[in-house]
Image 1 (spheres, rainbow, N blue to C red):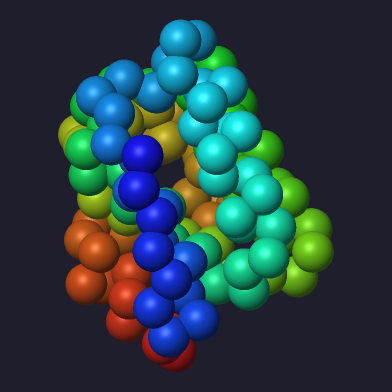
Image 2: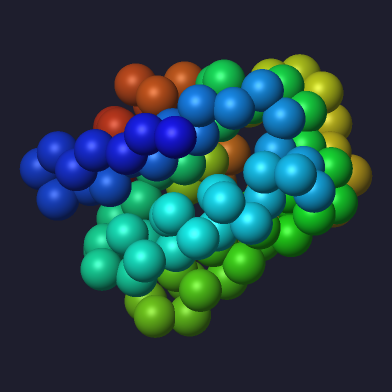
Length: 110
């Protein structure tokens, strides 16, 4: 898993194919502490091709905790199957879901 901070924006790019029961805990353990100190977060899901309910829970926890402390977060690069899941749970009502990292970086700059 990778993360980088550029111009005050934390970009989290999980380097995993599946965010599921097997990987969700390591995702949360690695990124929750980093996200806790960031005011703007981009979660780039371009490498993630599958998310199960446990993985979705990890994403929702990250989003909820970020918004609760007044920080900003967006998701980007979701694969088609992951976008379907996000639409089903209406995640777009809670957070912006953008197609590309470039769009997310423009969002962060605004």
